[in-house]
Length: 172
Image 1 (cartoon, rainbow, N blue to C red):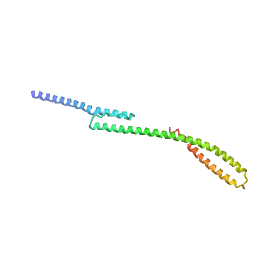
Image 2 (cartoon, helix red, strand yellow; image 1 turned 45 degrees about the vertical axis):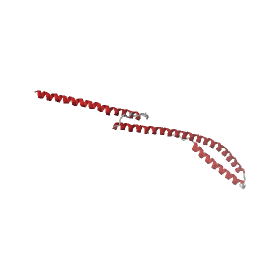
Image 3 (cartoon, one colour; image 1 turned 180 degrees about the vertical axis):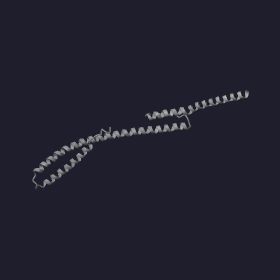
Image 4 (cartoon, one colour; image 1 turned 90 degrees about the vertical axis):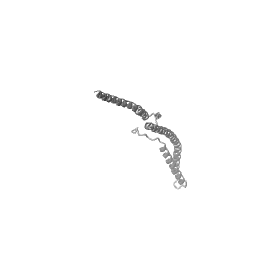
């Protein structure tokens, strides 16, 4: 009977030791694995939401620490890419503004040229109409009128280029 009680006591003690060991192991696993992974997941969530300056505090040299370092390097690259994109966007906006100014200047210049060309062309056509067909100067006037028309065509192309594009509102 004494041997039997001794075996039962040892069995109960062994079971309690196994349960205590399992609890201690679970606590250590939670502290060493789960908590750092939760911190990593929280930081990744911040990064996903756009907080590109968020970083993980690397306190370990194991696989979890290496994972945190890689995520931090990825966040640095993403942050650098975002800053480059902002710089590129600012350059593009400056260029677009510059091109719009050039377009406006070209339109003003074209209108300033177009009006005198129209007056010259009209005057020369009147003179041409009043000249006799046998006049030698008729050929010269015809050539000047052709050159004015060529210049007028060039000015029209400048005006077409300077005209702002019509935005397709269905895309917006």
